[in-house]
Amino acid sequence: MKILVTGGAGFIGSNFVHYLYGERPDWHITVLDALTYAGNLKNLEGFDESRYRFVHGNICDAELVDSLFAEVDAVVHFAAESHNDNSLHDPRPFLDTNVVGTYTLLEAARKYDRRFHHVSTDEVYGDLELDDPNKFTENTAYNPSSPYSSTKAASDMLVRAWTRSFGVKATISNCSNNYGPYQHIEKFIPRQVSGVLLGRKPRLYGAGANVRDWIHTEDHSSAVLTILEKGKIGETYMVGANGEKNNKEVVELILELMGKPTNDYEHVTDRAGHDIRYAIDASKLKRELGWEPKYTDFRSGLQATIDWYTANQAWWQPQKDATEAKYKAAGH
Ligand code: NAD
Ligand code: DAU
Image (cartoon, rainbow, N blue to C red):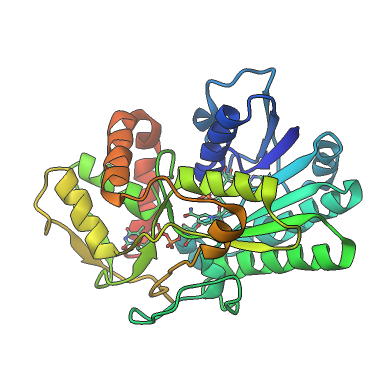
């Protein structure tokens, strides 16, 4: 099996490549990544060249994409502009990569009749009220809030259209918030952990009541591989691990696990259009494909993540000042 992984130098893509490399020793993995600010080749060290290769390039480059699709059996598509706050200040790259990039890949999947798995997000469904007894399912109506989530929603729609109209052999997964190693320090958990390591206070948007449904990134990887191998063409699968927590609870747990007073944080300007709550019902994936998450204890998963950022300061330190300068300009 020859597989192409787009966005494999980013957070979830690189965790998936490590997982796949360990789980499927007879597969050959090609990573295609543009190495934007979010991509890092240090995330992809230690692979044997007989089973792995890295291609530096853009998913919007139709000629390059065509040549790579010609050589592989299947594609898993992670590449994206992924950060909501960035999309509020400069939406254009989100349209280019998330919409035109996905279109470019779909045209190649169509031409070469390749199996295509599209990695998407629960944010396409908008948000839930804090007291809503419902969770997102595969049948929830699309209602994205941010430039980021609207471009991911558009990409999902393109995948569905290319499947129905052109017979592309595609599946889609919509996953909740990931945490774990190699996550860029612009994101909530690593931003706070790296800040505390530098003696700074965590920064909560608004009151900190917004809820996210946390899943360890390795559980996301196992879900994607399960869908790639056993998923039904044309289907969508929700991915989540019952990890709902509000942001204040997460910050307090980070402080406790890092040996600081649990009230030692600041409230900062809220995000425009901030989604209130995400919650995933993953019962279809469990019932139909037999998937189960392994990391169901958030406290120990978070401790392991804090340990990783503590041990890998050299990995994130070079990006800290530039990341915080962007936040400062936005009042966060
Ligand atoms: P990330 O920002 O950490 O990584 C994105 C990667 O894509 C980077 O390596 C970047 O260099 C690459 N990339 C960006 N534009 C590119 C282009 N035009 N051509 C080629 N490569 C390009 O993102 P992430 O958090 O790892 O998210 C990966 C995927 O998972 C995204 O599709 C995202 O929507 C989805 N997702 C993320 C989460 C989450 O919690 N982070 C949850 C659900 C779904
Ligand atoms: O739900 C899946 C989505 O999860 C993915 O599609 C996105 O790619 C991914 O970035 C993530 O989106 P969020 O916007 O939920 O993640 P973020 O880490 O930016 O923020 C998580 C929550 O924490 C959110 O409610 C905003 C809040 N926050 C964030 C930062 C950076 C803070 O309170 N303080 C902060 O400093």
